[in-house]
Length: 228
Image (cartoon, rainbow, N blue to C red; front, side, top):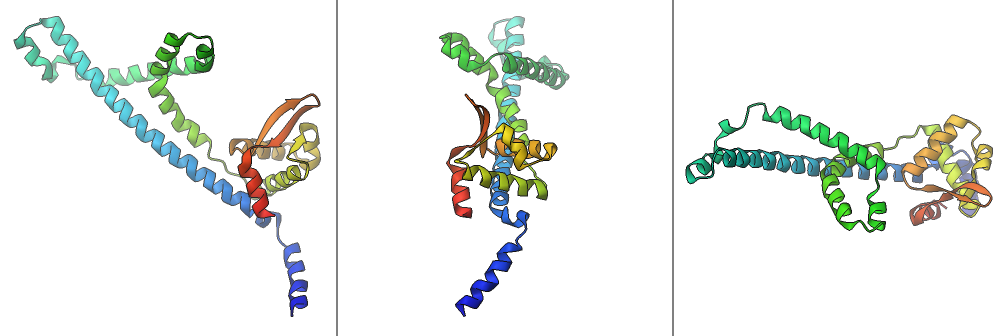
């Protein structure tokens, strides 16, 4: 009975398609996408709360400033809650200010790294920069988390899983020059490597022998062990 069962298992395993064999990677990819979507939702919620708080703080500050300019006395201070002190176009001007703020923050984000400023021991400038970039960074993280959502076609997913297995056989690394031997189609290769980097399963480094791709972190090794 056991020998008959063994004989039947061989052909079944042989007929498993590469896409079905890549099921562990499909599960991991789905988990990664759900986590990225959840982080995007939390970032959106935090951004709405922060911008809402900023909106009312600027509104109140403007009311207070106008009241002080008109005259510092108890009667004038009592007018601080009157809406007619602020123009009805305040929401529009606030939106324009937010757009300008985000543009400036994007330029700073691209040109200056807070870590380098901190390493240079410009601590006051570093703190001011962190405070200035706090709300924009939360806002930018929404798009960053959404971009982390990765989709692969069936063929690409099968090739990605086969590449991971091959890297595992080669002690967790493959030179970039040998990747063409694993995936001959250049477009498929680019999509696969990019997707595996986005989901954090592989990384890229340079050594004396050139650039190579390596298995990144313990998660991918655990994934491959479970599949084995």
